Image 1 (cartoon, rainbow, N blue to C red):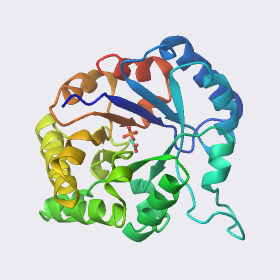
Image 2 (cartoon, rainbow, N blue to C red):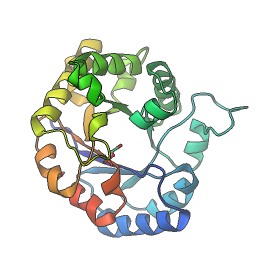
Image 3 (cartoon, helix red, strand yellow):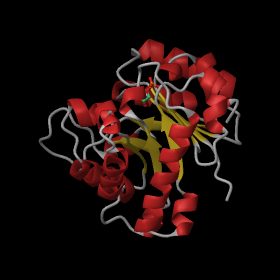
Image 4 (cartoon, rainbow, N blue to C red):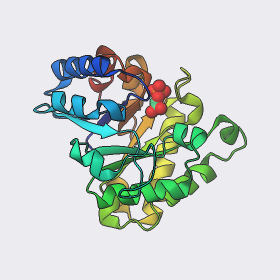
Length: 251
Ligand code: PGA
C-alpha cells in the first residue's frame, strides 16, 4: 500500500514572532504548492496564530508541539485542544523525547494527550524511541513496544487510522548522529508489527511512521527510500527553509 510521505518540522523552542513569520513566508514561497507530500510545521505556541495566517491558502499544515489533556481550568502554563483549534492547528506532536526526559511525560500522559487530541478532531504525531543506554542494553524492542502500546491504549481502530508515529531514537536527536538506514527500517518494521498486533494488518499498513533524529538534506534521500519510512519529523533542519525543502524534495 502506498502511503503518502509526511514531512513535519518541529521548531522546538526557537523563533521569535518575527523569525517565525519570516521562516513561514520562505516556506510558503518554496514549498507552499507541493501537494504530493504532506507538509506541516510546528512552531512554538506564541507563534502559532501568526504562522497559521501566513500558511493560509498554501498546502502547508499547522501543528503544535504539545497539548494538555484537560479541557480548561487551573493548569498554569498549559494549552488545551480547543485553544489550538482556535488558531487553526491540525496536528499535535505528543510524547516527544524532550517532553519525556525533561518534563516528566509518561506513557500514561502520552495516552491522555492522544485521546484528547483525537477527541478534538486533531491529528496526533506520536513520538517513540529508545535512548542510547536502552539500545546498548538490547531494550530497543521492549521500550518501543511499551511506548506504542501505551500511546494507543483505549484508542479505537478508526481513531488509530488518524495517527502518525514518529520513530526518534533519542541518541540521534540534535546530535548529528543518524540511525543507519538498516537501523531505521528495522525499527519501523518492528513498530508496524506492534500496530498490527494491537489492531490489524490494514491499520498497520495505513499508519505513517516518520523517522526523526538528525534528518538533513544529505541523508534524507536514503532514509525516505526505505520501505517503512513514510516521512520525517525534522528539528534542526526545519529552521532553514532551503534545508527543509531539501528534505521535502526527495520525499
Ligand atoms: P533533529 O530533531 O532533527 O534536530 O535531530 C528531531 C526531533 O527532535 O524531532
